[in-house]
Image 1 (cartoon, one colour):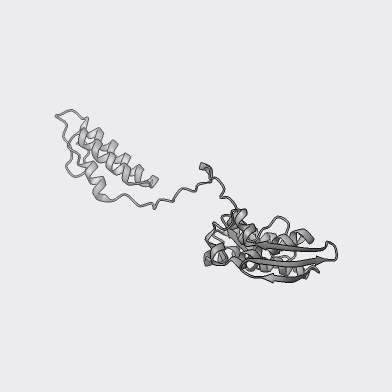
Image 2 (cartoon, helix red, strand yellow):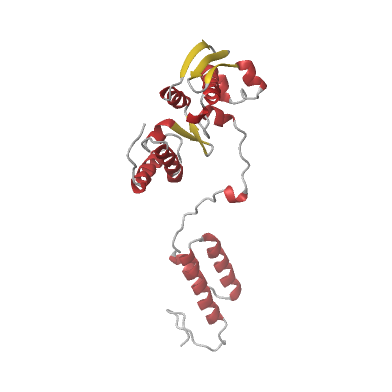
Length: 241
């Protein structure tokens, strides 16, 4: 299947829309755009990525039905021989890869430690089917799924260990400094009160512009408090007369 190249600008707009929708497990524009570029490289329209892929724990996952559809489109065939909650089996064949029978049983999943995932207990047949499709397609004709896994497989992967650089800090809401806080600094009667008012305001605000105003107010009041005792201060402006 081929399609005309979609300009990167259009892909970026589509990616933003997909991420904003909250569908398909794609959380960011970057994730959606990466999947769309992969789809276009494979000769498909970028929007197909939203239909065929999920992003699970940060990993791209090709849906089992999409994986099987690609296999059949490429000339592969499948014949199901068992489809129960205890055992799923099928015969996969392709002109370039021969024929193989693949089975997955609930006992195999238990030995592999997969059934600890709640989804296995709720939908054992679907999970066995997905495993069967993935293994069968990879065995007979891996070219259609190279580098990708099904969502069911990705859910069973061990979680990646996060390093500090992988952890995105929460974005704090920035707020302008409020007038009462500045007034408390400007009207501090002594150095101890000034320090207390400044420290309280400095902890409250993270906006650089707000902090700059707080520091300026502190320096202004500090200069006044350090003036000789006989200095006359303007009561409205706080400046030396």
